[in-house]
Image (cartoon, rainbow, N blue to C red; front, side, top):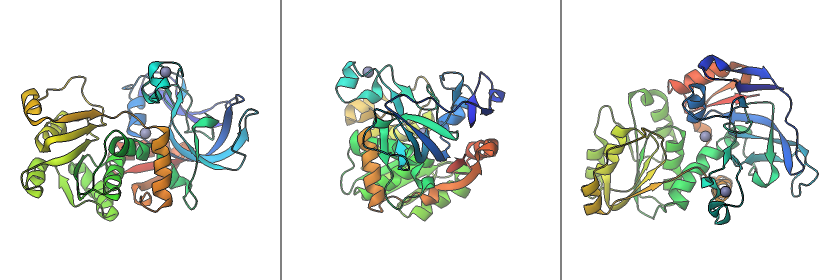
Length: 344
Ligand SMILES: [Zn+2]
Ligand SMILES: [Zn+2]
């Protein structure tokens, strides 16, 4: 089968290759991939900015149809339309695995990073990680399950958006735009989203189309801290969701969060960051680092989608056949796309 493989160090070592169809274990299913979505971390892998098991088929955001079921698998069958959690392997025995937090297991292996992923014609997944696609949902929309589940985990599971909250979302990539919708659908009073100049043509247009953002702020032209202060009568945001990891944006997060408010951190950034320690002590600010997603956040994604409470279509701004992956990656890199899909 054809697959997008990271073969070694260097940008030129990411390429389409003929590889064997994955061999199934008895607890696995083989899925024919219908749509794969490109994530920021796929770009990091291309540039060797992310520890990766080489060689590896990349891609962890996908949807597809079960082609083959392992002999020990119950509860699903050939032809089922599915999505899957991307934490493929955990040790199963450590403190975190045993206490329902396997997403922080030290031995966790992520799809398309440490085990062969989904930018291919077929992908092998342990059956316990599958979720059935909600009725009426297209494969394209379903391929956004993983980033949506990450935003759900950050805003509903690790933190809880309360009715009437002012939620500031920093960054208007897919997780930011999904986060804005999730915050609003669970009751946020006002939602603000930020971006920078290159986000204006496509990502801000999508933010407008979604109709959930009360404020869309170009941080290159306007000070988001001032906007939040004015909009909240000087109080500040109840929750700031950072998807950028940018030291500049995080500096603003410390200024715009209210006393006793929460900064929910999702974006990878610099290894170290200066923090206004005394201000945070005085104002009793909480920073919650929200890693990855969980089985329950995938379930909540399916539930929100079946109730028609998430618009996914506007986020899919481009689609390419797998062989044209370079065009798709370039478009993501230049922020001309919110999500570019690869269709094997
Ligand atoms: Zn992702
Ligand atoms: Zn473990």
